Image 1 (tube, rainbow, N blue to C red):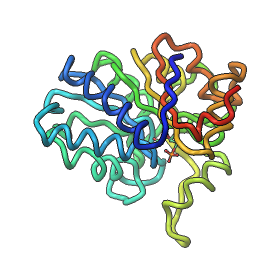
Image 2 (tube, protein in one colour):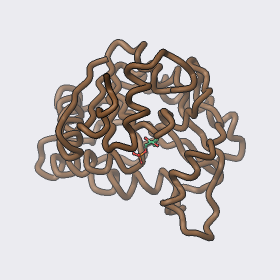
Image 3 (tube, rainbow, N blue to C red):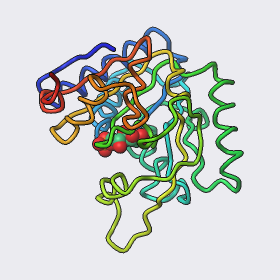
Image 4 (tube, rainbow, N blue to C red):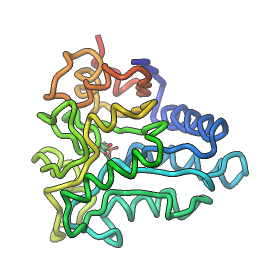
Length: 242
Ligand code: F6R
């Protein structure tokens, strides 16, 4: 693991964005693994700016998102497909046909999970996977106790994650308790992984990921096994490192 500690969230986003810019310049036909949540938003804004400036192009790029809520269509404002369209895809020169997010309203979610794995393999695997981390150490929606060799599957969300993500849903709005997520084994197969974490609320999870034992209780600790994992964090997220 390479650990990069920077002053603040803006510096983390800029550093992370630079890794993706370099990747796209070196290989415009890259296969990118993408994440949702609050953390990558500033990175996506930086990529949009670089695209508009003509420094990078997504025209040959393929993307695979980590996860999606089970039970939401892509048109639902809380779906991760909708998030990605709003935060990145609608603003860059990517062919939407080359953007993949697990299908939240799949008729058969189990076969949809295998189909997702097959699509990643057919694209040649993921070159670089962007990750955030949950306060409970999850990556994607691989909650604590997830198998370290798990593949894309239906996963129940923990109470902690449902509570953390309730901020995105209106009080009387249906909030899914199930997801489709790439597995930890799927994530570990990406050639490179870049995890961003900012803020004090992530400090315990960051400590467990980097300094704790490798264990299913902290799914992100599986990144200790990856040959090219870059962990980019701000001072607050690094505050509980020894
Ligand atoms: C999102 C995802 C999640 C988030 C994590 C952190 O696609 O896979 O693992 O990365 O929940 O979310 P934020 O960035 O909102 O703190």
